[in-house]
Length: 285
Image 1 (cartoon, one colour):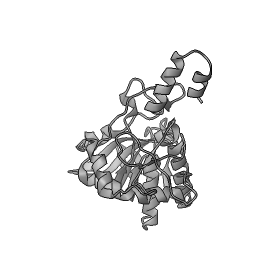
Image 2 (tube, helix red, strand yellow; image 1 turned 90 degrees about the horizontal axis):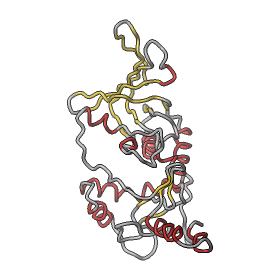
Image 3 (cartoon, one colour; image 1 turned 135 degrees about the horizontal axis):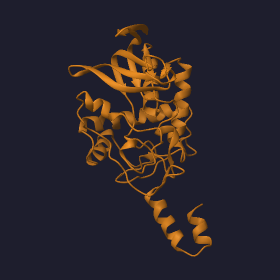
Image 4 (tube, helix red, strand yellow; image 1 turned 60 degrees about the horizontal axis):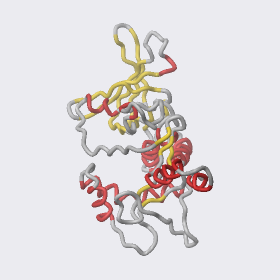
């Protein structure tokens, strides 16, 4: 990475030039950085609003799920079958569905190897269960904080690999040259009171955009309060809104930001309409 400067109206703004910039620091972004270093790419940096401030590390549910190719039991499965299930959801192109299905087992075992505590049976097989619209038992969970475990273990790996992290930086714009993104503009929040207002630039041959979901889109949401989403930055410079993940709506707690599944919801609703006693206690245990 090379640090230079850009002069605008007599003021100097820092500019960082490097091979790859990863925007965001959730599980997906950290996993990307971890793999890039393993593949020999060292000229990379993560630019993030706040390490540990995103959805991966701050929201949970009674049944957080990692969705993968079925890897235990005798029920047959294949990347093509899983891709078909993903494609049938209506939010993903078939080629991307096939890539996600094919790579899902590899990434799952990577997480298991770095310490995410997915459950397994006495023979070492990682057991699974069905989720909504899933004809196979492809889901697995390490508990209600599965994604937080993923974040913590991947963050440990990124620190071991000495990946440069620009923490407390707000990305405010992407820079594009024709159809290709070539850089970004950010605000260093530790220097907002300086005469440059903390403005800085990043120029990169590759930009990975891992900013998560648009939490600020909704009036009531279980997204972390700090996460307002940044997908609009990509749309502003001409990105086409395709293969966007679908949103899920349901019962949730907003003070303690927690999602509940349909099964839990139905049990809870029965409990609050029942007399106080065993039924209510069991439903909330």
